[in-house]
Length: 304
Image (cartoon, rainbow, N blue to C red; front, side, top):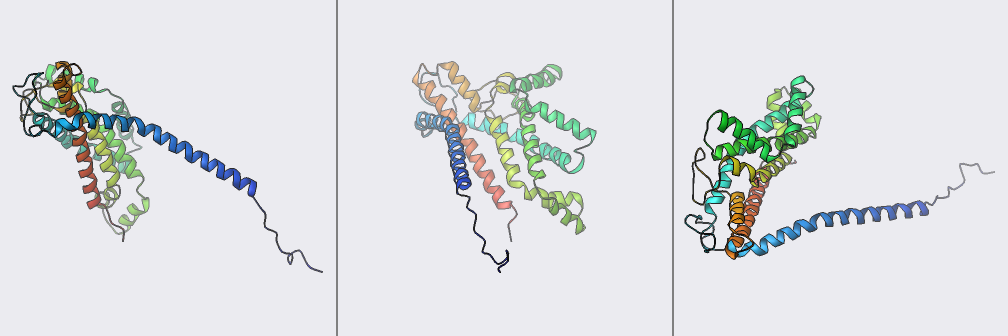
């Protein structure tokens, strides 16, 4: 007499359940792919329009070496050199102020006092700044620096307004990247007797450097395209101005706004300049992003 343990087990089939799961998996894949296509289609159309209408302008021999000084609205000529330099100066000053402050605030929230009263206050202020429109930031800097302190309208004032827009993006991106760094890495550093500040600087930040760089680049891309602070705090100039402390300053968003007022959409010359400035701004942001990613990859910790 055979026992129950000696009887061969019959494999149970789950054909119906497996078929249903395969159908659900295929349906989810199709929906996600469709959502991605729907999201990318407007971006691709915008990018194609800007390239098609602005490529001829930026390939001109004078576009990258001359300004619009002395040029009229309906006479072809001149370039965007003044606007490119002004945009880069604006972004550089803003980044020099925002990046160290944003990273240090994020380090404090994650590593030191996230649950303290000061940490909760900082989190609340970052949340408030995340929703502040650019024109509000510009009006605040105008009221503080120009109307109250009597400082002149300048590119520096624009950069200070853009700092208010750039800071919350950097803080949030850095904070999230520091939080996903494994706690084991920190504890290993502490076990070796490494001070906390050195553990953060030599282990935690390099581990999340790639994401931190991405967040910084998103912040830079946002502020380089802002127009309201330029109109309120400095004004647009068609000629070169390297002095960020006084005088009107050229910039690519300002150039696009100026060409719109000059008759873009009516005359071919301001229309071409408008699309050329738009494509130039996209290229500047793309080059900055690519360069930052290369640097982050070079200094990222390597797996052994």
